[in-house]
Image (tube, rainbow over all chains, first blue to last red; front, side):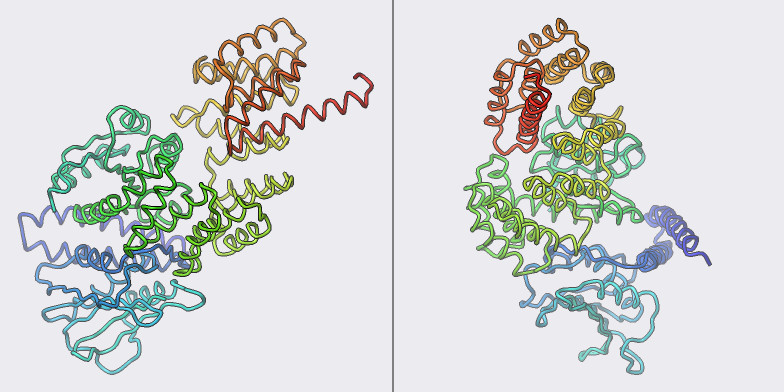
Length: 197
Length: 439
């Protein structure tokens, strides 16, 4: 299929979902049963944004100085949650620098995708974290679900994983690229991390 | 938290009334009720001029065909209609975000991607207001051109290891450069580069300091290095053009400015190419570029009288006085025969009449120009008056005015460049006359 056509079709679908999402948001106010449909619609639209972001080809990270703690708080406050979603808590390690350099918009997309993924497995809570590891800033998303099945380095969960991997890789500092990891957390549950140089 | 927002004054600029209404409702959820709306750039500019300072402006990128949100931002920044404490937020669709950002020479404080929710606006505004409040003392010093005070304020932020440290280092470097403390400026930029070596603005700052200190080779090498990382960084082309112009390599200078125009095809960029081409003596490029600038801004509030005046002057210089007079006539219709337009127009008309061998009309226009300019100084009216006097053969008076103009506008590249060009022209004419035996 023609690439331009694919992008155009997905783009149209994304916009149509946006309209639908707006209508569902209004319906939600009087009818809580619609909330789940609203949440589904939002997560579908986010997936399409992720798809289009990947599809555009070469990704450039527009880095600026960002305060990781403020940024993570904003991600937590703005992430869209379905009605009975688990609680989202935030742990910022004291060694987290006051500022770091990354593309806020892209990293927000990546963390949102990771949170959406964690929502599928979490029992009662999702933990967002930030810490410094050597020359990297690490953002993490941990759920308290059953954890990964068999131990694979990077199970192919599709779009979200690919999006996060590409976004991390677009962050380069003096030749060192960013990367992601997915593993079982020591405390249980699955742990996603995005490492930014 | 809510109380923080209640007293904010906000301006929403969008051509679609439904969109303006939607933002207004979302702002009302945060108890922001003091909201003005403008459906186009012209109305927005009137509001900025008459309704006092806004805390924030939400402006849609797609305003209308005549003026985009980016042009509006460029205009209000370059005309100093945007107070330093007003937060400017550009609203764009996701699909256009990439192209909007890469072609943005004048950066808004933030971008807001559609669709957005009230909570998104709230969290953005919170961060932006925190930033504004933290930087306010520094920005106020800079606005007053109190550079020593600005350095003191930046140091406070740097010492506190605040999250605004990068902005503080950036402003500190600029302030040190303004006061001629080149080594201190270098220290500030290097401190930023120590945290992140590929920061374009810090590298450019460093290159600018070298340029100001007369180290053209170092400045050029750094500038070229930045372009290798990011070929869309237009301010780097400007610096390379300045370096080439200082070396007398006008062809390269013009070429760099044309590359910047290719990246950001704005009327302002056409104007920069045109003015540079004119003062470097390339009348052909000057003419087409002024014409493009005029075409792009026609009917928009961003239209500038100087484009029309420079085009007329270019035409006079190209030996087309009749065309020049027609351009001025159209200019009177758009800008009115008053103020700077009237002052400069008289000087250009005088030269057009000289070219048409109409000495009497030329004399009348020279007298008119003289009457309209209350006191010669570092401005364009004085430069054009000098040009008219030189054309009329009053070399001594003309040169005197050029000196006054240059002395009155230290560091103004346009005026300095024009004066240099006019002196070159006079020297050239004398040489030609000598060769033909007339003198």
